[in-house]
Length: 51
Image (cartoon, rainbow, N blue to C red; front, top):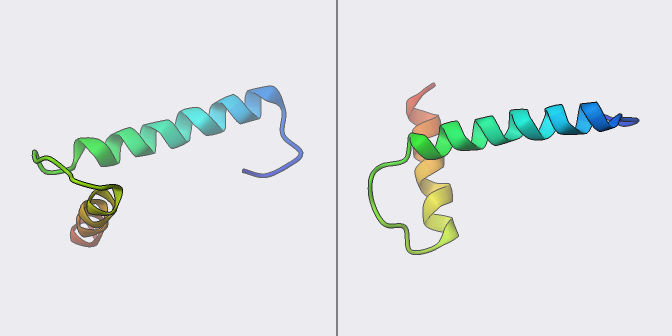
C-alpha cells in the first residue's frame, strides 16, 4: 500500500488483497490443515506449480 492514501484507496487495496487470498484458498487441496504453517506450505506448493 502506498501512502498517502484516501479512504477509497484503502478500500480498493483491501478488496484486491481479499480477492488474492480467496483465490489462493480456493486452490488449496481438500484436506484438514492442522496449523497455519501447513496452509503456508500448501500455498507455497501451489505457487511453485503455477510458475
